Amino acid sequence: MVLFHLSIACWNELIYYCNKFKVRSFRRSVLASLNKVIMDKAELENIIREVISVSADETGWANLAKIGILLRKKGVKYGKLSRFFVGYTHIVETRVDESVQPPIAYARLMNVE
Image (cartoon, rainbow, N blue to C red; front, side, top):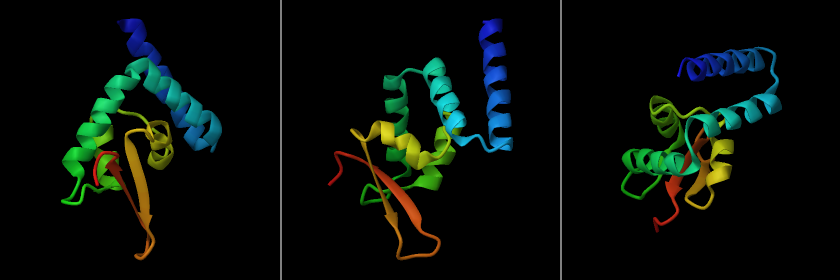
């Protein structure tokens, strides 16, 4: 268990330096690896479903900023949330409302009509 906590601390430090020196592509792969270490895909899918359901309005759409806050509280690590959802297109649909400035991104679960 101590080794696991140590490796999480090392990952966090690596992510810090990737952010500091703008090593984006490497940072994305580090974040993806970290998510695989911490939780499996099924667990992540359940968390995503729960967070979007809680954040969604009456039409089923949820603001990506609100989703991001809740995902972080649940311990999900990601770089850019819209890129994170690319791996979950089978359960999540995204859209951007460009009629407002700045544009607002939304997501909803796929089974919502």
